[in-house]
Length: 234
Length: 359
Figure (cartoon, rainbow over the protein chains, first blue to last red):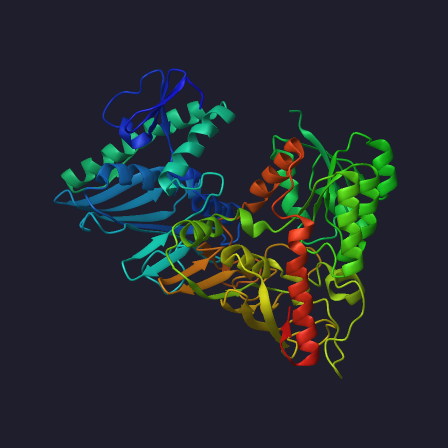
């Protein structure tokens, strides 16, 4: 490994750049070397869903829905809000115009979003799963010509590529990347996002600009719940 | 090490297009030329916008590009031997499609050429570079999670590629000659079974054993106009006692289009390799190409699987370049692969004779 590269608990440092998941930079101003990684955009399912929309296979998008069920020990509400609102914009190529949100005890939030393209979106987050339970995530995009989703029809739970049933336990594995075999999906995304930053020189600025926008949107989501009213972003 | 100068010979095989982006992006290869067998295929390739010259004559390509060090042999099965001879004489390394030949004499000639000329010849069996198969190997071979294996069942089912790649429906081109499928059967060898060697290969790796016997039967064709088989089931045992059932059928219907693309499939999933592996320690169920993302919509308003995790060609090319650089024999070499071809021929013999065939 390049000696200029170091890994700390939750971030990576390379040549003075601090590569962090964007939501980890919400609580402070962006430093000069801070690069917010929008690594969920690198996931293959996100890439394919976006491709389906861009190719026009489902026609003009009318509705986007995201549902996240996880545990508070695994992630924070704001980190999921940040990620999922970015995915709305990534899939639909629009910009969030307004939000209306309802929080409950810091463990759940529902958000209705309107994009500047007119597309309506819903985000449901529940963080009441026990810590030892696998998260469930679903993304659905509804167009005038069809529907795209990362959840197979007529099912409630996410699936894996391999299930191992033995007398001791039942394990499941989701292996998606032969080059980065052994890393989990989040690690794969972060590694690929970091590489992309250095492969595509313009991406660093693009993601920094997007981060600032997302920070405003996340704040608006919180403000909407506090005031119980729709917040329009300018 | 400088990137290896590589070319593609013919663009006739269904897998040819899988290499385009991989060869363009791969840092260890410099993609310098391709040949097409017809003007139509050449135009189709040029429309994709790759800045690689495309020739209609192999001789012309080799004359103009003496720098070529390796080729991907992406032609119909019946052309493999002559193209291998042409490459071997020039000392050019070869990445062959999955069926070098079904004919023992031709196959032996290929092995002789590779040995005499000291070139690398790797057979393309891309499942080895699939992350789900990697996990399966780790759990079964590394961690021995299943203990002693008893069963290895697998599907390797697809739509039929014949309308896009007509040679796959011509017995002389896919099987190498016209051999009746059975007594009184008006079909011939060269269909779905000839297209699907992967699970016959994989079971040998996972069990570390060879075939003891195979029993095959062909069903009535889904596509009555084909002169080759499209429904086949195979069962049997390995020498270590592992039993197996394989389904290598073209059992997923397709639109009869000439250029593969969106809307090709009628059934939502155009290709599947699912494995059920059992032993005295438990069972593993694996989907080598799933889960995916899904959609309905254009072009035919059908529910469709959008393949999401599918990059086997990167690992396959990594190994090919490594073998060339280190003058190392590929794990999927001709000698290894011959026993898989023998097993597939035994299936055809069993279908013909109605009895199991012992190897």
